[in-house]
Image (spheres, rainbow, N blue to C red):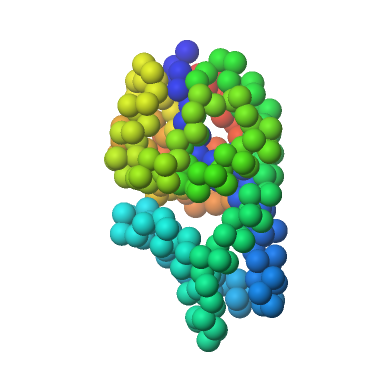
Length: 228
């Protein structure tokens, strides 16, 4: 068996974060009397994306990402809001969403009988634990490694060093990292010395520059890689 340790990203790799977000965002805005128009959504996504990029680069703590993104969005439209209060409400709605990527639950249950599976995620710890449980993925993973609990985030070396040190008998040579983020998962994993598999969830056609060892368009394709 070529691989023993399978390290899975969570959002948009095993669980459909985009679908969960699409359900949660309108609810939190509506509860404050704001209609989530395409314009409001575009502003939120731009601000949120920039904050998460700063977080992944180590320029911003997660708390600042979570507690300012809604405040900054509404400030753009001339309203001062309590970003932390909005975030708390959003977390509650988001935690109710646990839509799996097609085939994810079946795949993890089958693979867990033959491999050691672990989750490596930059998401919020409490929310991720709840979503894993509600999706029916409990029992598939030896551990869920979360940046909030570790105090470091993908793609930092500190995040991966912590993971490596907390898996008994871990050997990079027999480990495969599977994720959808080119920056956090693929580049971070490669710099940490891991073999990487990019899950091209959105079906990007021009992906020749993505520096992954493997590329898949569906989770089912992972079986072919593991059987080689």
